[in-house]
Image (cartoon, rainbow, N blue to C red):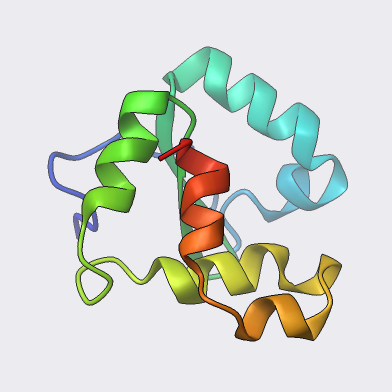
Length: 104
């Protein structure tokens, strides 16, 4: 099943577990290696959870230009950084994160 159109490279891994071992052991090294191998945009599956990684400024601007109902950045942002932020920030307007991530 294609979750992104056009399709992007998928980091290979065993069914369901996917890239969990490398990603969880050392996410920075894992993502650096994946970016070197697959480019600025790629899909990673970790224990059934699919994550689209986009590193290019053009890619980030394009993603954040989509409507919230088409690409739930509020939920994604909360899930990815929520453990490191005070709850008060996560109840605020999420446009702040759009500005931080895209400079717009």
